[in-house]
Image 1 (cartoon, rainbow over the protein chains, first blue to last red):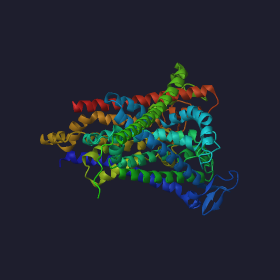
Image 2 (cartoon, chains in turn red, green):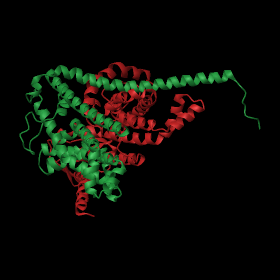
Image 3 (cartoon, one colour):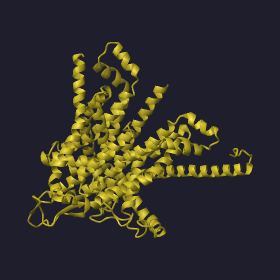
Length: 320
Length: 295
């Protein structure tokens, strides 16, 4: 090997090594700062609804070897439920919408128009989260709260979780709808590509046995896309789990309560980390910040898991 | 065993055909409806941002800093641009050189690992990077809310994305070009820098543009690392909070004053315009490239 090539190799290797190193440092620091909270909270952290900074004017007490304010407790079951429920609602909405839009774009739109119309769906991916939040706050919530949720709740009044009270518009379903819009381009774009890549011979075989064009889509093309759809949906789930600003602005920011129905206010782990930062900084024992670090660690581990699964299901990785 | 029934039954056949046609029409209608819903959501978002944003625009915005809930946005514009430039300065070498490594030495065990970790990091929520920046730079290193903490946090976030886009760009270069370069006696370093990068430069640039758009539109990690300031940046890398546009949208829309709302809409218009322009530019360059390839 020439010296210039050896030097080149060492340089690019060093820069590439920054990436795994940054994940390692991320994990270590979050674990280090969450450790006092992990010691103090134990497993209750995941199974109780009690985020309480304690009496901020009292004298710190020592519990489990950790200094905390009297009455303080940090447990986030309501955040875990809020995060998972809003992301699942988002997926339930985004998968059919994404599949439908992908079929429409790939099969019903003339090729010359296709890339322009596809933009109308795929540009949703580049709208910043905070702008989605603004739109949800100004447009979507008044619309849903006055003209949709009251009727929907009345119509579904016998169904558990879907019946009244219809709430204020800030809540689980609104968060789910906006999250769905945010992750639908990922599903639609990947699926459209996959549909367009279906071999022409398969379509012709379908036509030859007298299938309609829609039957070809439903019975020949879609079954082949089951695995990519599962992979890309997992990826979309990972995006929805960690979405912060939009959810913060439209979810109602519930504290310590589980949603009673799909119209109830919620918080997610990510949105709660932003809404609680200011008050956590006031805690003289710093335990509230350690608690937030523990939420961050839990969210990191959850997203690593979901993305690793998505990566195994979709070996091509990043595409959008 | 009865023979297969192949009697000619026109009535049943036509019935089935009519039913199939109905199901097909319903299916197409459902797909069109899905598309229409998504497209109308995007158009409505753009309508809100342009309609309210344009009516909030005035020259003052570009000439003065915010003061309380009024004033201009020049400090936030400056902050957003500097934070993104700083993040790019740090992330481009890692992303591009790292991408070269992963693509050109793809059989190394380390390359497999880096690619996997980069894919996973692209999906890590931005708020987690923000928390990391807060715990390490803002408090442990005692930099306080600052430009440096914000830039490094954003850089960590976008570097894995750039690494993957650079890798995909390099892999798109036809193998014959590599072989031709080696046949002329060029080494690996010369092949990459003089042949491969030149061939896929616009694709690498596309990745950088998209990463710029991501970084410009971020809010959550900056709340944790940069906070907010009513003043222009004073040139200090640490110990000085910085203003940025996305903060204005989030924070000022919750104020009860019309002047605050106007600033929020103006900031939303600027950020959305910039991000959309970058995304469209990136798509355009990709399209042109594929057209040239296939010609």
